[in-house]
Length: 91
Image 1 (tube, rainbow, N blue to C red):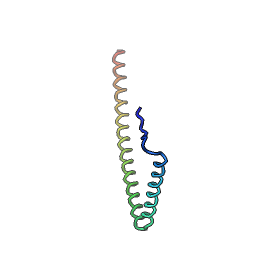
Image 2: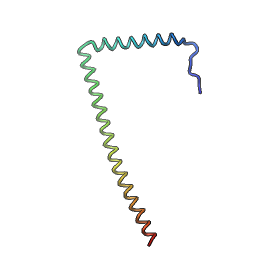
Image 3: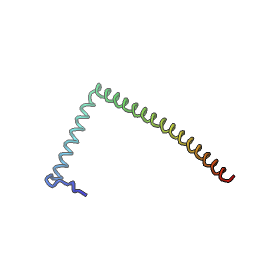
Image 4: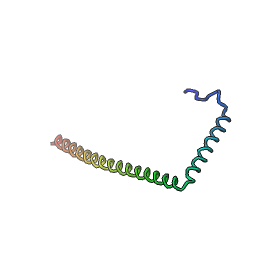
């Protein structure tokens, strides 16, 4: 296993820098969402992303259902074939 710790970075300095960056992002987000027009745009984009995700989920579920039906049909067919071969052997 490799040692990923950097010896030249003070952990306290890294923590403070992370906190400052996080606070900056939070403030920038608050400023950006403070404008009514921007909030509406963000809300629309988030809705569009949600709708696209739901469509993808639905498409995947449909594909899975089709594959499952085909698989079940194949299994049933193979069971019948095997049962027929077993019956032929008994004769």
